[in-house]
Length: 397
Ligand code: HEM
Image (cartoon, rainbow, N blue to C red; front, side):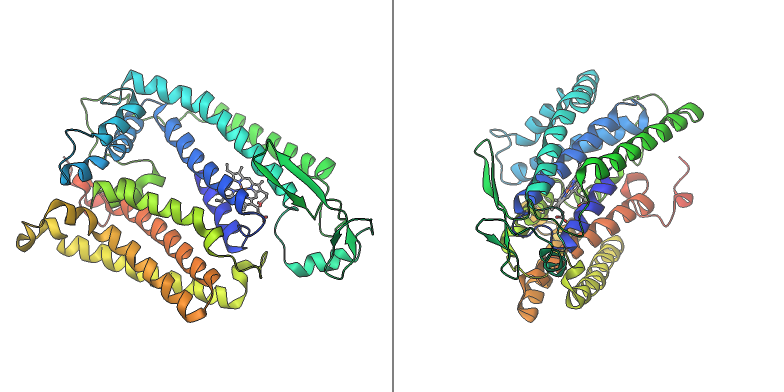
């Protein structure tokens, strides 16, 4: 589900589906993204085997990571936000029965209810925003078929269409110029889409039942706090973060994720160029920017990883033994990637004179960074988070 949501977000991003009037739905989508991660993370503990136990222990330690910053500025004694977050998550200092019951309730009641509400709002907005984003040319063709009704709206050629207004408990207000338009390239929700969704749901449930009937769940040993796993790895979608956390707990666990989520949420407000909605990469220029960004971010991330594996970083060097902790927290391989991605994106905005191109550059860099870090932590990190070419090279005990 996490992978599908990331792919869906990338599809919406690269076809400019976050632009006016869909900014609000993009933000709702961001909420769904965070909730999907939370659903997946809380579900991870429920098998209560060694894999689950140690993965969630790592996740909970990430929640405690602000301690690195509060230690560095000497305020942990008065404001131990890291411990508060960890206790809020686990109901205790460690993963135990309190955490299990907390994760269970979150996973089966609280998060599904929030997800259902958010998905309801998401789908409602898709309709009210006039269906999926599509190239303007498709609407212009459709306009020719629009019924001429007395109203204030008009198609590209000046033909009138009806305009409905809507509101959602005073939260959202607006008009929906697309409603009542008879478009060639649309499909009715009822019965067309509903039948397809019902069929897909039935096939999925049937496939899950078959899998459940013929294969046992692949459980590891029963959870045991006395037998630590080495390496203890977080769930796959947090492995990139775990790699960043190994450079700096605070920047990897809180700082960089916060920057990424904030940047994604601000995208519709920073890039307001109206043209090119519904066109993949906004055309050939965007495709080129995405390709160059792919090459740039691949070279940057792999280069930094190789450097760090070979030479270490500030805290491993004798000459920098006395560098204050705050500098090590803020200046590490993770923050260097993010800084270089930001510079690249600003340079793209300057040279193309387009905020959309800058957004494509930044989004592509983050996506590539996430993929490479996840791969690297999955395949090349072994006991004590050391680098190994493959699992076959791990020490035997
Ligand atoms: C549980 C998670 C989610 C579900 C079930 C979901 C479902 C959907 C569906 C069914 C559509 C219409 C079909 C399509 O565009 O493929 C849609 C559209 C959309 N979604 Fe999501 N979505 C989720 C998460 C997200 C996320 C993480 C984002 C972005 C941050 C997002 C942003 C959008 C946008 C902007 C549209 C409109 C697309 C357009 O107009 O072309 N959604 N979503």
